[in-house]
Image (tube, rainbow, N blue to C red; front, side):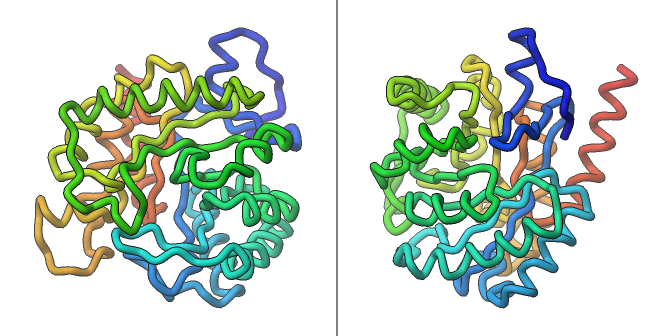
Length: 293
């Protein structure tokens, strides 16, 4: 993060402004580390439900090179049952508050509930990561507009509970692009600054194997919006479909790194991953090759 204020339009497109004057500069691919404080997430559910364990893991991710720590208190795996706002807050808010005191890494709260997002911002969260793209809770729109917090708009067909019930697209990439266009227009009409929006095509969220591959291949289609593009392929089930190695999601390291590298080569600005150290190492090789080209 840097403090110099950008002025040119091309510079503004490469900066994510945080509310306290800090910035995330997109001069290289950024890494978002995943921290699920849930009992049932698809990969690490139950590992970090204790607050101190969660904070320790988040600090480890920051030491390994995570630019953003994404903290979620409700599983969004296929078929997941929703949790109440009060329970979600109980899980995430104390962790964010403790973590904010111990690191200046950007903190993202993974929620679609305005109640949770507001409390998270109050104790130090910098970014809202909304899998519904501000569609599930009307209060999120006003919150984002008034608090001027960077917000990730993710594409999803259906809800976590139903999204993998026979998803279908005629042209997945084009349909996601139209979705982004509609959501961007909606947000700006509601007073949300365009410069604070981040786009996520939602790999694994209401997508078939072929759709996930098409998204990775067609990411540059989303660059037309001149907004940061985030991709989260880490440990997703499509990797297991391509190379079955059992049911354990944490055994998908090679495929996760390959997907993150592919995403960056095809235009992603941010990759959301569980295995931060290994991903950072891979991206440093990419950046070295780019600089020498």
